Image 1: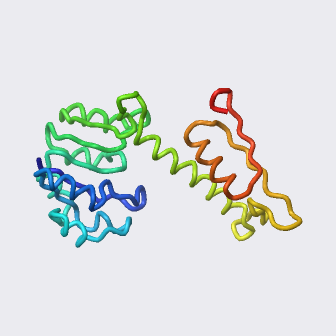
Image 2 (image 1 turned 180 degrees about the vertical axis):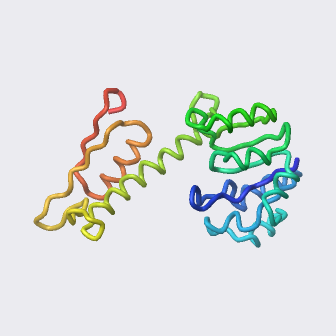
Image 3 (image 1 turned 120 degrees about the horizontal axis):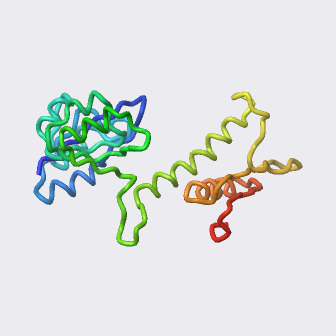
Length: 205
């Protein structure tokens, strides 16, 4: 199959949908992978690394759309990207349909796009493995960002999460003990903070 990888808008998303190792796995199964030039740069994967594992570098997003049966990206499709989709193509991305613009949803339906949202992919047990990984990242990042805003240079009170000799650690309150909350809790505890987790689900607590 012909599989295309689009370059993300760096303002919205800095990840790339597949690493060179992922591309190599697809190529080894007989697929052709077309990747837009510099799609991996923000994630520190050069064009050369993708070429070394068998991908073809193309120089415009239009060429990716035109050559591919299956399109892969991270961020949900924009109106402009939806217009470039060809009838009956398959699209893998985060869709976030609950908050998507109506025109995006209507275009996907009109063009009969098989749109598969990463956040809705389930495993055999009914779990959402991709969403879980993204939630773990979000949980860790939330603690890291919160610590940054406690710094005096960012307008904070000059508090270090773990405290120092003679100064007690910061108290961190986390609302919700789901995947995001659990990841944030581990990060805060690892920093030495005193952590309070609030959730109505006793089994999670």
